[in-house]
Length: 478
Image (tube, rainbow, N blue to C red; front, side, top):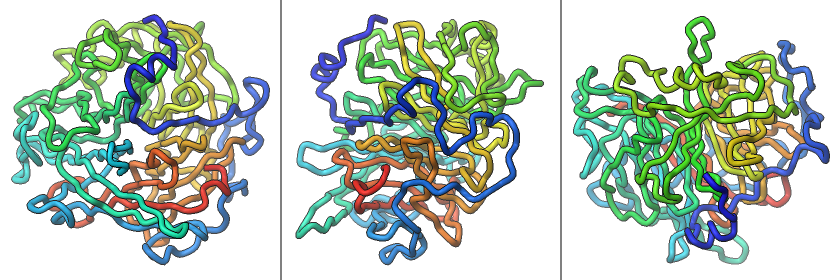
């Protein structure tokens, strides 16, 4: 696809997604190594406390939400809870399993949040019913809800309150992550390839699009040309409209199993339903590279893309790796559990949850250099669980800082990654509350929203919650 001038593209689409400036380069020269992480990151290190970095100071008990520790001078309040009746929408029982999320500006000055629900109920569960109508599959319990949030200021103090919430996508399965588009919509990704063989009425494993302007459940349309596989996240390059997609699969070399990084080149920019071409990333000159091990932080790898001939294979339910193995047969690279993805720094940040010698996580950045090629940089590799434990969802702030949600042991953090490649802490619960997910910033950058996932089956005992956090972001690296 021919690259499109960035300014013309943004003007034509009347962008309503958050404006992201991305991280600064890790050094003046490409390939420089972040000082906080040794260049030789291929050998296991003795676990140690995270190195101190410029941050927001020691975490302290949050007065508004005492289950959390956050930096002094910040506030964190709950907005919406799952598994219970909505506090603002009559007749709505909010689904649980809050996961990926993004924020969009509304015409009235409020903020639209679109939130995934990673419900994993089986087709035979007594709870197997959609959360709204119209629905894609009458036995699918996943989907999305859309929230309207008002942010107001008086005498320098912010107030963040929930105005409305409603179902915006129904009848899907295991809606884990996704990503915002520059034309003002959310791409919700199914992290499963379940289908009729497991009792469902429809095949799953697709991407669905939800406009930020929707005021109720959308007509659910599976974007089949974007691939049927175990999806995780999506991120769009606003310069071209190309969508980058991650796959959440374990790297198992003996079984030719792993995760691919894909890109979808649409036939019509901004209209994904019009079809397009799916491709998978490969390292130039190194066919079949396994990126989970043996990488050097700061290294820049030349890459190209190989075509996926059949993005919607008929045997995907039997063979969840059917798309992945098409790419591998042409020399594509593999990762270990690709999860979060977010646009920033003229490219895409990608998180490998289990990558690295310590299997504690890696962060990559892909930057296109032409229509068919680009550069993949190893930005960070965790040396121990104390440094960074299984990063999952990722977001980039309007000021250029990266925020990472952990999904490892029960002692989870929301952590930041600064411009020098150093990790610091933003949110911690001394008594674990569960997995964090869905980090995203309000369009003006003043408020960080995040989720605590809660139970992923209907009727579960752990409620999900969406929170809003704000404070002196300008005093630190986020």
